[in-house]
Length: 306
Image 1 (tube, helix red, strand yellow):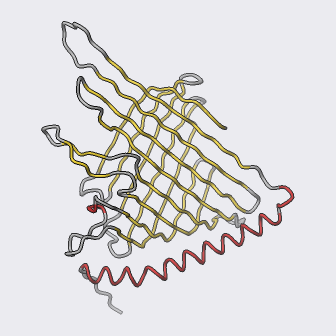
Image 2 (cartoon, one colour):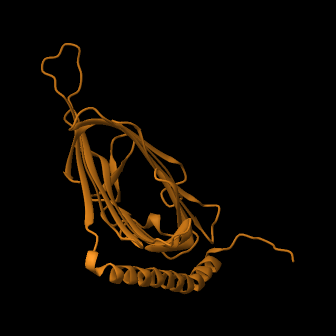
Image 3 (cartoon, one colour):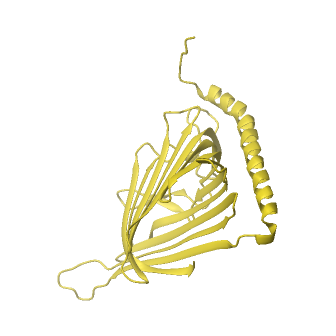
């Protein structure tokens, strides 16, 4: 048998997506129901000794400020701040694990008499239900949401800002189901089928197909998703965390979306820490170029719940 490949036009892609939409959602629903059934069985078996929820919440605040008055050498007053909140709620039983993580961050900077400019804005939610099969791999079902709090602006060379995003515009939702593997406590990975939806309102460039006359406000992609997470305590006060997300759509397998988020955290004292973060994003829905964001912060951290 000889296979031939050609590039599909917009109409053909939409037809393929429509055909894939229902079967994939049905498959995801079947897997989710199966995992839920195992979960209900596990909860029933442990009804008399229901395991407690474990919650952990870590808040952080990084500040930087410089002010001048009659300073002969010159300079501009600056003020920068970033607040963050990372939390995790987990219920772990003999046969199931339900893990929920939530990450929020917002930051601004001000130079001289200028306005405050946004430097960080993140809402990142994830929920994973895993059935412990007793083998090397465990089935799971997961859902994630990524968006932001406030309007985002893109600035030109003259300093003029153009609005390009806002709360839930865009919003990236991903539902997936597959198999997970954890060879060592510090490393875990999962691979499965996934559907990704991009929802917009005013800023349609994230979801719109430029090859069609109609302006699409939502985009649906079915494909495969891989997520790998690593967490190592290099020393007693040094922690390295990294997360790699890869999504490949079935209709455009070459347009792979990659997101790498790595953090090196050094605890100076009980409440003071230094964090170095490197975020790399390659996603054609956000632009043609690979985006890189690096931040180094000395700030205060507080464990609200552990």
